[in-house]
Length: 540
Ligand SMILES: Cc1cc2nc3c(=O)[nH]c(=O)nc-3n(C[C@H](O)[C@H](O)[C@H](O)COP(=O)(O)OP(=O)(O)OC[C@H]3O[C@@H](n4cnc5c(N)ncnc54)[C@H](O)[C@@H]3O)c2cc1C
Image (tube, rainbow, N blue to C red):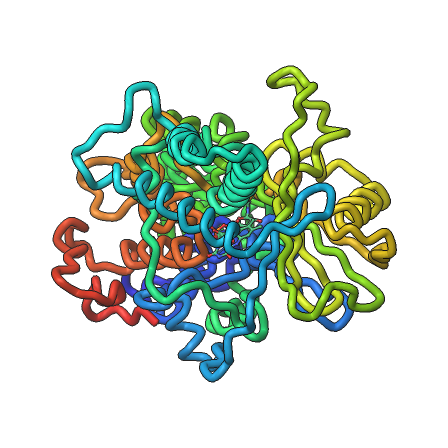
């Protein structure tokens, strides 16, 4: 795509070459890479009043708090880390803070550290074994198709060797706590939902998890700075993507409200009419986008970064013509679970300075029939730990249906419940009430409807590849008309910010490429740096 294609459209804010839907990391990355390469004939439509999507920061007291992404997962080969380095956002002489975890039972008894260590090591082994199925030719035991089932099988074999009932029970509770933690990492309600053979599709980058001193959100600034502000349209929720316009639109300068006289056919058959001049300047568009606020936009290509959670709700009405069946089926098969944060702010510190996290070893409810949870009584038992964010801010993680229930509760109930939990597990009735609580509501958020993508039992990495597949108008087109980006479209970094960033970049690359068939261009040979797929395009 050449930048001289900016044509005379610059004055018209409803028409452009490329529309980007969504201003989270994927959409911003697409815009950033288009602009970096001198192509500015695009517009980004964002539903919310802010950019960043699932990267969002608030202040609690003076403390910056991330409500969504917090860690850069991995350093080597992570483009987000590289970007952060490039813009001086990483404190490389930052000394890692000591992390002292304790585990406590409901009666306030602490588990010996050696036991915690032993179980954690065993658990990691069980998890690694699950990951190995993806690349090995071995099949799991018959009837075991989920990560949860496989780990539980290993746990029962492990516990069989422990004779002493109390020791055995303690270990069982530790394993259960680690499984709850895993639901927060994977983004599901229960590990029984996660496909065993596909766990290994997620690729972990080396270098551990790192945080930015200014919070993950500080990465947004250098990206947004490179995007012309006039290209950004906030509060523009898209409700319809017409992507295969049989009737083609021509630009009717100065009048974009009347749709009826825009078809090429209609304009071109008229003679001696004032329309002729607009016909001469006619530019045809493949895509028409409708927003909730009544505005329409026209473009040749659209990059859709709408999250999987939202697509699950509206894919049937959002696209016209409808998405191909293979895409619909993949949207249905993949999982978009809920993971929330509960942030408690205190007047003064109360946790021992050396403790950074308390794992909560909940006893299972033995009296309730299987599958009949009364969430009003049990939701809090899904909180697997409380960890210190600062001396006066404590974070609890919660996932699944309990997180979705928590999103409906009042602040008072959450404060009351969390205080009771902390007093019980720390065996200290004087633990103060927090002065404030902030809970995320990723499931309720209409423009997210969940937290991140996971591969459900019966789904596979191929489903993610199907979601990523662009749509072409016809076989002769070298550039797609609809491109898809977002964490849910990266086959090995799904659920992450760097996954979202890379998919936005790939979409921009596809549109920036000269009209060479894309198979020839996406040749990365033995390049360790994923940046140099396309020569001549400035990737950073
Ligand atoms: C609690 C939590 C913790 C996380 N922790 C981490 C972490 O530590 N590290 C990590 O790498 N990742 C983490 N993630 C995941 C990470 O935040 C996401 O993978 C990433 O930000 C997704 O980017 P995206 O652009 O694909 O989607 P989004 O950020 O969701 O962006 C999509 C954008 O589209 C907009 N939109 C939706 N519908 C419409 C519409 N109809 N019209 C117009 N705009 C629309 C939305 O408002 C949004 O701005 C976390 C996520 C959550 C929820």
